[in-house]
Amino acid sequence: MKPAPFDYVRAGSVAEAVGLLAAHEGAKLLAGGQSLLPALNFRLSAPGLLVDIGRIADLRRIDVTATMLRIGAGCTHAMLLEAPEIAAHAPLIATALAHVAHPAIRSRGTIGGSLANADPAAELPACMLALDATIIAEGQAGARRIAAADFFTGLFETALEPGEILTAVEIPLVPGRRYGFAELARRHGDYALVGLAAAAEGDAVRLGFFAVGHAALRAPAAERALADGAAGIEAACAALAEDLPPHADPEISAPVRLHLARVLLRRVMKECLAP
Image 1 (tube, rainbow, N blue to C red):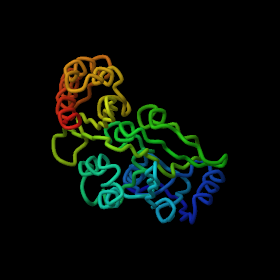
Image 2: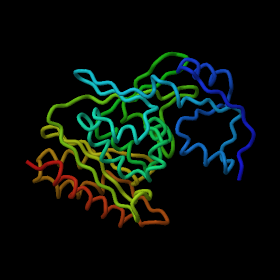
Image 3: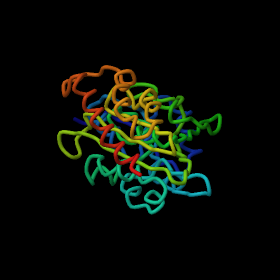
Image 4: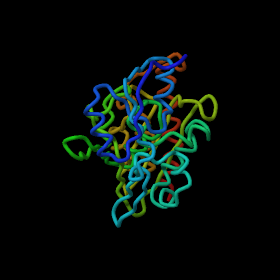
């Protein structure tokens, strides 16, 4: 199929893009286009204007301060896989991105697009939960900071307001933080049937599950059980029945999904809590 007719503008700055969104109701942002273009071709979306933000230099930066890693929303998955700043300060992201689709998609898809799309089976939203990230959004009212825990609100839904642009994510630098990641899919590159990203800081563990419900989510009861370290793994597995909503789809039943989530939790904690 072919998309409905639309106008196209390449924005030279975030401010210009924000202005275009405000001036054209229903306009859509185009970055990597890996989710938007199929929706256009199937006419699931028919905006009158596409605002291309893919060449805004400020959105393709990676900056490191003494306390923070800042990743521009326009950075592609391939860029992040190769960036030494990611390998040094957020290796969880690189590990997760190796599971995202295939090289052709990773070369175009962006971190901002993945987070704004909020696919419940995507890896990066769960990583943001595990890393205690902050999402930066900009609109006509200025910049806004949104905790990752508050950002993913439902099935393909986020806390972004109409006219706002996700411009960056900020990840606090925590010395000695340990990471773990695993997902199960029928084939490499397929959507996950269930997945888990985790980060451990001392006795505190942050779990970000994906493909277990309508959005990436934390598992607070399991996290509390893991305060006992490796001795709490089985209690944490039991607590997942409280944390994870029953979620079945044509691929997998709810009981099997819960079982697989427990399998991944054991696997990831052996890596994350290793002495």
